[in-house]
Image 1 (cartoon, rainbow, N blue to C red):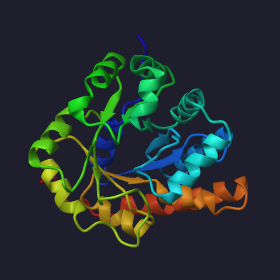
Image 2: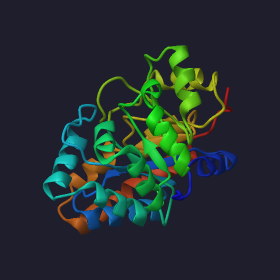
Image 3: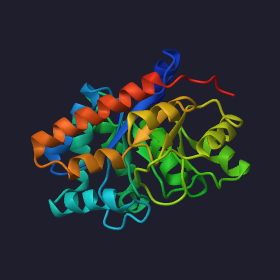
Image 4: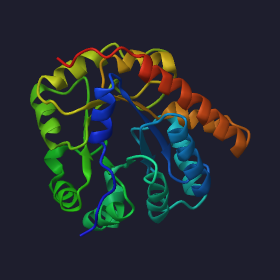
Length: 274
């Protein structure tokens, strides 16, 4: 049997015990190149990220905004394939627990158990599956359990109490609370409904809750850190790389953004879970 690397929950619990939230940083594998994406993820950890989220580039990213879509297209145009994603995970997992964020279709095409086995062999912690609901995830749940992988499902402000309970029961690692409706992307202000969503999730589970979609700076990270166990940042990192002139500038931009966000999650005064 394959053996997964570090799972995410101990890291989130250690952050909670330290009185702070954890920072989860996202970048697509192969963006702007495979080697460059590895370097950028390593820079995230050096600059304060606790958990890494590696995107699997996909040709039809319907839930992603234009920023992440542009990065995925760049990675695909450069020839990034699933094997490259596992190579990126293997390098990243040496430094921090590393999840893969992927649409479900590429996993099905690859073979569910084969994907789980190869992810575990690379040291990956598990999968975030934004377009897979627990009701339709029996094959993935079985494969993940066999290979010791985290299963992270999404909940949204529109989720019913029954749906929140079902998703929370199915998750291992943390519950991903999508703070806004619609596609991904950095925003000028954090979601006004996210605190209530986290409160509703905490009413049905004691598992950690991570909040994603919209955070782009340390001030916003501190706001979310006051009530969530993890602050998940993606589009802001991708945008910083897209706007950089070269790889050296991208490394500096990612380091600066990570440090700002890490300061935010450490400055946010955690409220007691309710």
